[in-house]
Length: 555
Image (cartoon, rainbow, N blue to C red; front, side):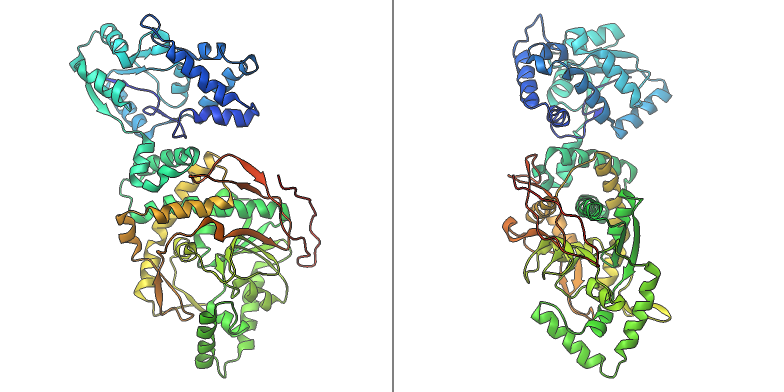
């Protein structure tokens, strides 16, 4: 049996859902305004001029009718293609398997690029040793008309029934060869496979979707027994964690922090993301138990219901308790982390009853804390989103998503950390899926980082909203088991599934610093390319140190 293979979207994959995204990326990288539009027009013109005697175009032909200022971009386009193209792991495994068996492998594709370029890229990506190479731009014949298949059959001296063709195009790789008597195997595009598994991703930007499509395809090859929680880790933990940690790292660099302390348990996976993305940043994972906070801080916060719950706990459990000893033990516990003016805390969501306040009370020193969501204005800190006494849906979701596979901490004494003994079924479930979420999350992080995906704070919310609005029944069934504790003693639990929220109800804010921040406006998808520089807020002293001043002009 002779096996013939298509090239693009079969043997080789681009990290984009639209092949023309290459032109837009090139325009941005080179600062060549108007290039993508001119390249698209030239491509359409050359294909419109095809005739029976001239059935295929070439990249040289397209560039010949473009404005002269873009003629030097042809080699840069091919260089970019070479950099971004990746071997399809499924096809590479099959290619090598057939080679070991000594079976014939043919490459056949409709493509406007030079054969020498395509051959060199294939070899670089691991595909070599083919027994025939048929490219439309070189043979002046196309698969789409059947002519290129005819040339291949004649030169290889094989009957149609002796060939199995594999490709992604339903016309040129399936219908046409099948009508000729060639056996066919349809290879569904990896982006279409992604959209089947994650329907909400149909609405996100093609660059993010393309990177996720290749990453998810590779992940399924490497982990054929993946489960739902690996899947939610990849699609949500990876993307949302990547966005949050990139923002923290970028802001830390501007301000001058080089030590990040992640609050347990919600910071468990976030710290591991940071270690993977930024191994040079020093990190620590520490605990700030709720019960310790109540003993040290009292019934503080912004939520009247939560304050009442904390007051009830104080009345029932802390009368006669030496709270100063609790504070001393916690202060001693923190000494191992060497907190200084280059240290920042990383937390999830806070209504003012926070790990930051507990740490400050214990060390008698101001600190800076990064929050995903803050529901009260703090003295020194930064939050992706800020509301006034308004909980948002991702508060519960992120707490579950990034949590640790360990029980709650009930106290920190002079003997060490005391974990809860009587663990509820809800906590046991949360702990049981944490490692699966972590595995999917870190795999996704690798692919996003390799593709250098650029994302912004607004994208976090837009992406989360898309998922919440388009959850499948399978998502709802699995996530219905995911619950978080709502009270200080962690006896009452509520579902993490809530309605999506409107874009206008949140804002990015930084307290105590003025930071140059890039924003992305958005239309119907998770990201777009148009950005503007926004005004940013206050400049104050933090931890007794005057920070930089920088004017930020709104565009």
